[in-house]
Length: 375
Image (cartoon, rainbow, N blue to C red; front, side):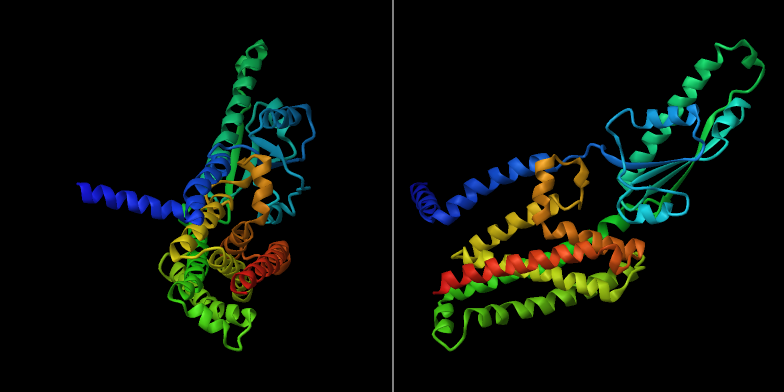
């Protein structure tokens, strides 16, 4: 036992003698707890809701008032008409549309069924199912209110009560299959792990074995060294993306309705960012273990603040601002849009622009930090 005690003491001294490792062990978990404690939120709220009111009567306005009575449904900043209904759902501007057709109030006055339409973006099956359930709950409350009002009118007892009935339709994932929503995200994670983790550890390995100094005394510039180290993982990342996409389509029967060229363009921009993260992690690390922990921190942050599991709208405002520097936030809509909606370039051009901007910024920071390390 005495020998084991000495070994344990020695190991702790070795760990905390490395100031970089001490910061990783102590600081990073608290940062993750602080940020991700707010980001991980399964509550359903701020569902972007648009209402198409073609009836324009006191009865339809009462239904609209009931829909917006809580913070669950948030008025969407988009004009929706019956003609552009599907386009608005496909553009991520609207999550739910309630359609109140003409004759809604008249049907109630005649004690007939008043039909409304409930249309949802079904890609995230959990959110869509719960939002649809809450909407039907509001309609049931309205039916209860109509029943209570009808009892005040004695003449209404001889007639059937006009009730509100809903026709519900889920777009882009009509069966609400959660797998269709999750698999594109898993494809993104596979690409991230291959490119960021392996790049970070490959460069640090040169430091550990002492070959980095030998490379730097040759007529190789830091930029050329970075290119030589990252291009193989860029190629591997694209190969992994290809195999993962084929596996998702052929084995899981996931529909791919978009453009292959747009898929590879988005992946190229995204991988440029993840490779930069790997290079930066290698530049601030002295061992592969340090590089692995550094990339792991960025990976966990990236997953939980990207909309992979939890809607960004559920997160506090300050966390939503932090997600703007998360490349996975932009790559996931590209993948899910191409797989499930068949979006075109102009539907997601802002995601491409964001990835290009982040790629330039991250790559510049990685090169600058790497140069300081090797000089």
